[in-house]
Length: 193
Image 1 (cartoon, rainbow, N blue to C red):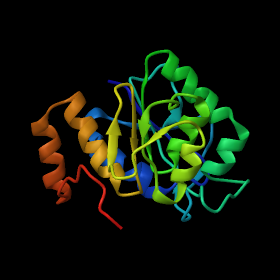
Image 2: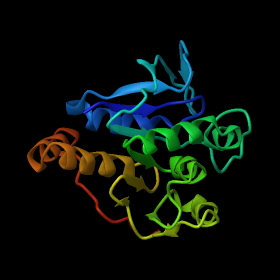
Image 3: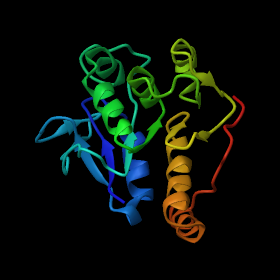
Image 4: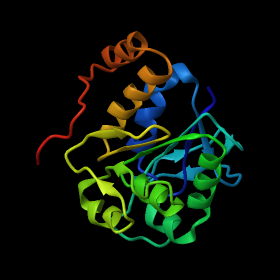
C-alpha cells in the first residue's frame, strides 16, 4: 500500500515522525504538495521530503501543528487559510485514498469537507474549532476509525493511530511488534486531563 505523510512548513514533528516510524513496514514517504528541497517543522527540524503527493496513495496521513497560535505564515492554520492542502486532501479522498489526521491536522480534513457528520477528534485545544465544522466531536477518544477517514487527538495519540493503521493494513502481530520495539503501551482512549 502506498503510504504518504503530507508535510508542510510548521507541521508538528511528532505528528509526522512518530507515525512515520510506526508505519515503517508500509514504507511511508514524507511528501509535500508542491516540490520543496526542505520543509521546516514547528520546532525547527528541517526535513527533506521524498517527493510530492501522489494522485491516489492508498493511505495519506496529515499531521497538525501550530493551530492554536493562529500563525498565518506557517503551520496548520496557515494551510487551512490557503486552502490548497485541504483541496488536495478532498481530491485524494475522492479517489479512494484512506485519510488519517494527527492532532490539528483534523482541521485540514474538516476544511476539505470529509469530516462533516462523522465522529472525529483532535487536540483538546481545537475541539471547538472542529465542532464548528459540523463534526461529531468525540473528546474522550484517543483516535477514531470512521472507515475511510481516521483522526487522532493530541500529538502522542498519533503513535496509537499509526499502530491501529498498521494492524488494519498488515496484522495485529506486526502492530504488536512495532509497539514492543517502541516500548509503547497502546492506548485506545484518551486520558482524562
